[in-house]
Length: 168
Image 1 (cartoon, one colour):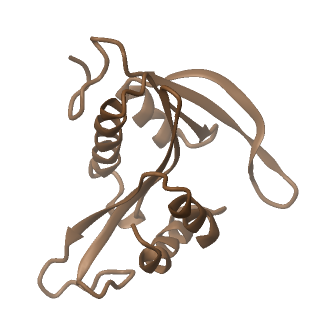
Image 2 (cartoon, rainbow, N blue to C red; image 1 turned 180 degrees about the vertical axis):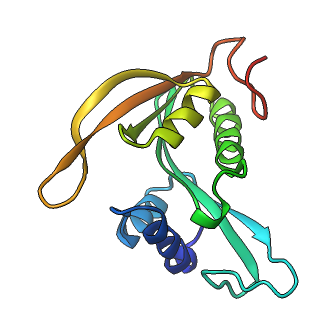
């Protein structure tokens, strides 16, 4: 992802979430040197990608992660609404796990809205474990807040989920 991609990324972000990241969140992540990647697909003949890209490809999804000492924190993972439930979330997680292991990370961390059952199910099937709750972590409307479930994936475990599968 580059700064030139931020308009298209933000358009998908707004479609995917009631409380989307701002372009500044993505710009700050890029400037910090965090892994910020997009998943692009080829548009089918006659298909008009939305949001439009100058190269004709389709923005399927993206992720933002923050490396730390012996760990990686997943900050944002989004699949464009038109492409959800097609395996792209798992594909993005596979890429992040491979990259994290290449960085010698031992843990992968994330927060997920307590109400986001599809995402929680994906993470649990992938091998993440709920380890805590952050009270009032997410905005949830006019002065309301929603709790986040903190989840972790042990990347050191020999039997841990391998990319593309549900266990070794």
